[in-house]
Length: 333
Image (cartoon, rainbow, N blue to C red; front, side):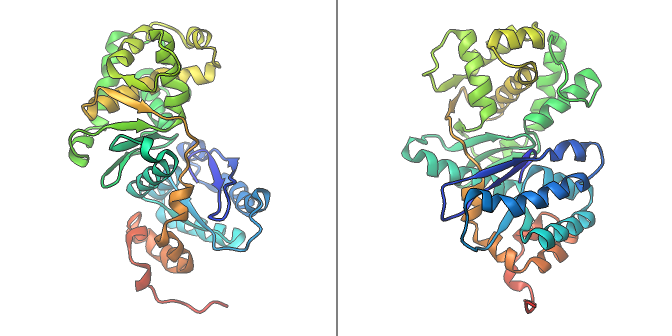
């Protein structure tokens, strides 16, 4: 359950189903999650049947970037909302910490790519957050595609309406954007080890940044490694264009083109912060579902959900990390 929707999967099936729900817009507007809850409950009820998960099984939901934002905005209110969701849908939704989401990402990538995953970490850029995840270390931040774009809209265009027209961008604005991003990514140096190498596994890179850079550089689509120097040259070329010109050049919609420059800057900044000169790119439809399904702690919490909700307002994200075994089990009616 991320910033833009819900995906359902099961350990006994390869099928996944999705429902789109725009959580971020409501949260950004200060309206909380209330207007999305009916759709959420309906989806949690219906998705297993639509996917053909006929077997009765334990069900747990992982709430990621938007749900972490909702927790920041009001932990007590969120606990009440989660109680309603569980009562009406039967799904115990947990607010998953950033580093645990990163672990899910690496777990899923390792499953999909196997020995072809040759880098130390995977880069997953979502709508609300990003993770650089490895077997033993993870950096995560609420700086996904939509949030980073919105940050630039606010900083450079004095608007929180997204997507906004970042192009054309002056050299001075480009410098401001890079400086701002460097500050936001400064924690990478202390969180991750030296000599990090990354494989990008998300569509903002595989479907957006990578093909755009290949087009501008005259490279073939078979190339699966993005060079930082080539990316920087591509950024310099499109800053003078409008979103309409960018959309025409790359054969995309104006809405998708509006995010391209901010996505390019984000990837460039991540390479700069990790002191890397190249980024490997893999095309796969990765979700957090395999990691969540393998998370024994999450399913323990689904059996002790009253205790989890009691702890959530005071412990916040650490409620997930606390020990489910320390809860007093209440008899089921």
